[in-house]
Structures are given as C-alpha cells and as structure tokens.
Image (cartoon, rainbow, N blue to C red; front, side, top):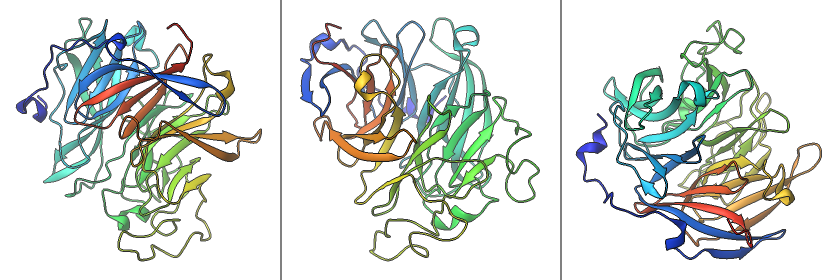
Length: 378
C-alpha cells in the first residue's frame, strides 16, 4: 500500500462539476478561450489521462491514483506499491496502454524506495473493471543508482509508434551524473512494455552505456511527447537558473547537461564549458529567464484549428501556458503566453478527445482545468 494512505486524506464528498464554478474567459492572439474548473480537491495532481468513456484518471504526487467520472472523485485506487513521497518525488506520470480498451493496462512513473535511497521506477498494472484496484502490478524498471535527495526524478511517459515505452529521468539533483553513460540519471529511456531492452536501442549491447538509455544529458525532463505530424520526440526540460529547454531527442545523442547550458548555477556561477561544445546537441528552444516547464503537448485537435501543430508548455514558475509557433520545417518561432498566474502553478497539459486542453494545477488544493473555445456550448 502507498505510504500516502497513512496520511490524512482530503474530503472525498466533493461535487466536481464545471457548473459549480463560473467559467473565466481570456483573449489569446488567435482565439478567445474559456477555462472551466472540472475537478478540484486534488492534492498536487501530477498527471491526467482521459479514459475511453470520457472519465479522467489522475495521479496525485503524494501517492494516490483516482478516477473522476460523472462529476465525482473516486476514493484512491488500491494496489499501488509503496511510493517514496519525498521532496519532488512521489507518484508522477500515468499513461494508458495503446490497447487500453482491450487490456486495461496502465503505466506509471514514481519515486520508489530501495537500496537506502530513492530512484525513479516504472510500474505496469491492470485497472480492475470496477476501477477500485490495480491488479497484475509489476515494477518493470528501477534506476540502478539511487539518490538521497528529493530532487529531479523526472518523469513523463510516451509510447513510440512501434509500441516501445519512453520515459524521462532527471539527474537526481547531482549535475555530475549528467554525463555518466553508465548511470540512468539525466536520460531518456526506452524499453519494451515488459521492461526488456529493445534490440535496436542505441546502446543495446551495454558496452558504451546502459542498454536502456536512448539519449543522455537531460537535466530534468518533465515533458515528453511524440509529435503527431513527424513522429519525432519532443521534450521540455528544467534548466538551472535560466536555460529551460525544448529538445528533439534522437537515438544515442548527448544533449549536454551539465557540460553545456544556457543557464547558470543558483549561486550565479558558470556551469560547464558554456553554451556549446563539440559532440553536444543544441536545444530547439530555450528560455532565459526560466519558466519551470511542467509538461508539453503538440496540439492535434478539431476545437482550435488555429493552433494545429503548435507546441504548448505549462509553467510552474509563472502559472502560464506558453504557445510556440513552428514553421513548415518544424523550427520554433515566436512565443505567446496566456493565463498568466490566474490559476497558480500549472503542471500537466494534454489534448482531450474533443480538442479541448486539460491542465492540472500544482497545488495542495489542486484542480483540473478544461480550456475550450469561448462560445462553445459544451
């Protein structure tokens, strides 16, 4: 049982309908939007996914997994392994199997306790038909070198077009781990859904790096998606003081942390050798000052044709959404920012099946926001 179940639980008798909260409207450069609160009473909600029938499954960082259906918040789903709730660590991302409608399988990333510390792990489980419990629970991955800090666990999950599982792990608060290829920290990982190593991984034989590593030098990626237009990976990563990045990771490449960065250490000192070095990849986009990116998504929906293929990134630091234009070649262009601090720190962002955006707020009284087109009766 998760350690968080030993803690006091928020009140469950909540009516969570959008109708209880007046929608707020905002102007953006291309379209006017409205924001409805569709769920509240969540404790640091970290990730949300939409189930086939339109209900939401959501993680709470202190170690709870819940369903939101018909305007009601479920009791915590049982069956989670023990979660290490420490600092930035806890229950993190949730992703549905590409064949969830048939196999009811979900994947979770979390901070797990072992070997005297904590490290990022990946859990595979089956959601029971009554949605009360997880069954067939298995930890399919645990990082080899744990850490004793509560920082930089990552972590987002995405499925490649071939069905392999990609996920991010941060540097665990120790920049020296960023360039150690025999350390899972500061990496994008790629495994099969049973945790085994794909034969075509760039370091599959384990001679030059750990075989699960897909790419290296990522300080703390908390956004990871595949672009619907190109099938290429896109990540959003926390820098230090400045230097938050969007990268386009490719197999076997090194994205620089902590040898190169556009940020500085929190004490004001230079990090590494500067902003570039031979053999190290440049970001596709960076922010200085930093925005503290929570997650990102590529818009691919019918509700906002004006935003098709644009990249949206949430900001924890400023409580805003950053929309980034891209040209025909995929190069990032100008940035628009909206919903500036109106709802507090913003964490996850996904495109719902109807084309609305769903966003979670990073707060002890967290919410799920639905961003739709103003004037839409839904």
